[in-house]
Image 1 (tube, each protein chain N blue to C red):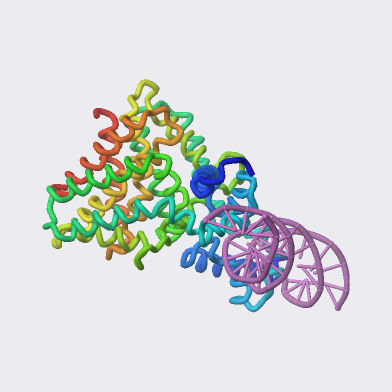
Image 2 (image 1 turned 90 degrees about the horizontal axis):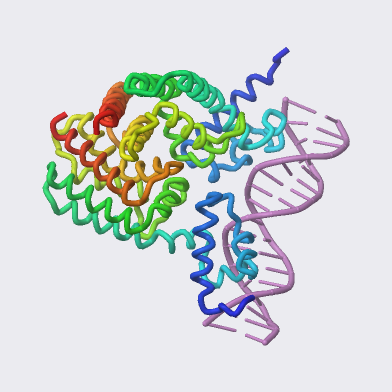
Amino acid sequence: MAGRQGDTKAEIRRVAMELFTEQGYEATSLREIAERLGVTKAALYYHFRSKEDIVRSLFGDHLAALDELIAWAKTQTPGPRLRTEVIDRMLRLSVEHGRRAMQFALANQHVVRDLHPGKENVHERLNTLFEAITDPDATVQEALRTRVALLSINLTMFAAQGLDATDEQVEAAAREIAHRLAAEAAHG
Amino acid sequence: MAGRQGDTKAEIRRVAMELFTEQGYEATSLREIAERLGVTKAALYYHFRSKEDIVRSLFGDHLAALDELIAWAKTQTPGPRLRTEVIDRMLRLSVEHGRRAMQFALANQHVVRDLHPGKENVHERLNTLFEAITDPDATVQEALRTRVALLSINLTMFAAQGLDATDEQVEAAAREIAHRLAAEAAHG
DNA sequence: GTCTATACGGCGATAGAC
DNA sequence: GTCTATCGCCGTATAGAC
């Protein structure tokens, strides 16, 4: 009940992000978040419709940006050039949202997966993106390499946990790994 | 000695594996599992100490095998040969346990992560493995490539969802991707 | 507009009867 | 080995204080 009444909503988001990332989504109760802020959990319901809605407010922008990327990719012709460009755009998305946020998303992927601002879940949306950038006559091996190339961006950020690396080093490694995998998908 | 206990316990495991994989761990209640078997949820507590314990009974063997792999790796000298061998053993582990089980583990990684037959969680155990196979003087880039190489095995199995591929094709692709990443880690 | 008090059904878990 | 009954906590909902 401090004097910081105006930014309660932002405070909830900050504390939720912290606890969700440290302990996981299910292991963090609304009572826990509320107590940290010195309010009752009912107060959270003034600012957010549900617990899931808090996560939505943390990742909605990123998911919308992902949808934009998919929509754009669908207008392009599959090929090595498109794959390279999509990887760069995906990397930019992940970097902008922050390594910490990506780590939360990976650790709680079952929660992020079913955040549905639209109607498809993240799995289905990613599948759409994969199909848009994969050659129609690609072998299974090539298709898998393309998919793994894209997913390796976030996997690299995940792998960097417990490693003493700067954000720039992680970003550079992620780009390099993804691009190599994508290049091999073309002439593997 | 065993009587009918073996049957019921096995049935619980079968139904739990089914529902956990389809709907996720948190979205599946013990009442749901019990009702499918025509018993009350309290009856499940005769066979298992907790909900988490059911998952432990499904993945304990795999986690124990992972610990064996780590213990073995720690007795070896880091280098390209060791990395190749660890990848092959890891792949064998994942294949033996089945793609379906690996998909469950990836979709519910927050649950599997905190299954502690010992005391370290899966993240910490994997970190131990990474350190055992990475050269002490490796750059951040090289260390990340080694980590991503190992993690790419399960990532490939994950990426194969929604793709019309046989188990053999997925396994071959996983091996090829992991080995290439590991090879690049040596002379990147 | 911002928050508290209170209540609800469902959850995982336990105690004890049969 | 399975049951009923009950526990405390959870996310959620709403009435109403200021």
